[in-house]
Length: 179
Image (tube, rainbow, N blue to C red; front, side, top):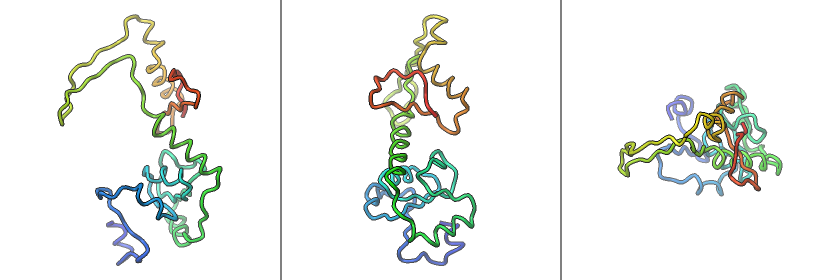
């Protein structure tokens, strides 16, 4: 808001700014959106998977994947905003890319730990209650699926995140993550 106020004394009536700590669900806004403008928030993933064009003003996990309008300079960003009414909805292909990314980002990203178990006390502070290591032999260190997934991500040099994107036929046994 500080930056907006620096450049605009007042926002045009057709532009609304919703602060992050607002109680409004972004889900309720998608049916009203023609274009989504975000730095790199998850709202961009959600909007794109619904076919809504997304203008990004930053570099994030879904930049340069073919379903967003990525602005690399202030001039490019302002130019896109000045012509926002000319932006077409996403193509079927772009929307499919966004849907695949959303699936991997929201469902394939969490890593299931098998080599260790952690439980927490059910309090607001959620203090560690107990931790246990499930590896019983030296060979387990090199064959454990979760440790193999972590090692694979470290070796491949994943850009920001490491995804374990399951296929529709996935049986849950994933050794190698995808980036």
